[in-house]
Length: 105
Image (cartoon, rainbow, N blue to C red):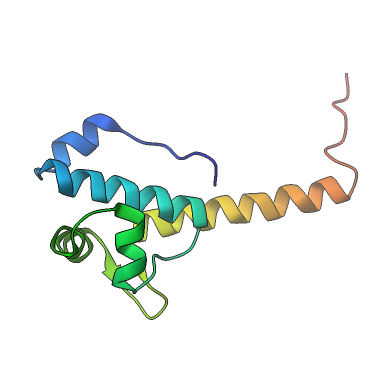
């Protein structure tokens, strides 16, 4: 995914965290959207993404993400990714059929 909606006002009002935790969180959600997959359960991979200390990463993951079998997720982001993937599949099918029909005047 090349872009996603971000609401700075909601983010700033909803998060009372330090600069390091905020940066780690933003880097993790960026990586989540770019890969369109749950974040790795590996602490080494998480540290590579955030370039932060393990204690900062652990705090962010345990407070804002949910650990699943496939990795760390945020339900709202996962739903957003699934909606966009569904829309992409529909647009691909429509394109293979010749695109949308022209509007009748």
